[in-house]
Image (cartoon, rainbow, N blue to C red; front, side, top):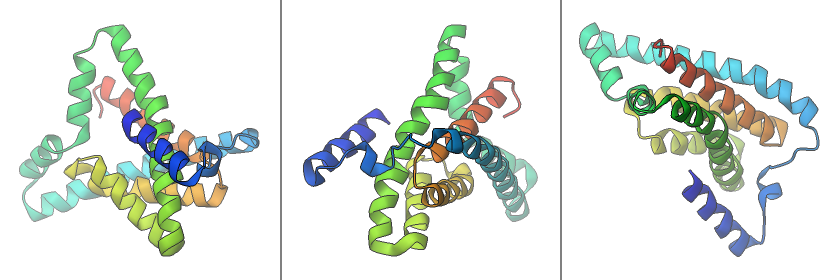
Length: 190
């Protein structure tokens, strides 16, 4: 994330002379954006969970329930994240959850909404920018079992960014989604 975001920010600065504010990093209305981001984070998490459940249901209808479950486990992000978290000492888990819930959402929102969506919106309009940036978001997570849920999250976060005009609400929504997912994995419910 840091390499991708850092490279994108340097390129934007060099090529266009623009900075973080031009990508949507605005904090002047933070008191209004924080509750919006938290509420939308809960909706994004619930929506992603519903899409994930539907993906499993469709897979179980196309194959069989056991194979669908194996595919979702084998090709999902939860297995990788859970494996990484479980191998860490207690303090390492706390640091990893902090990174997953704070740094990753900031970096990904700067990259996928602030940079990619903004550039795509100029070329494709709002609907095209939303769809293509969400596709890029889902593909770059490299998790076939989670693709539909990640795409839905990407769409929701791009619309939130378009609606609010700042990255704060999407960052908070993304952070809440990641934090809830990480906590559920740690509790063994993910």
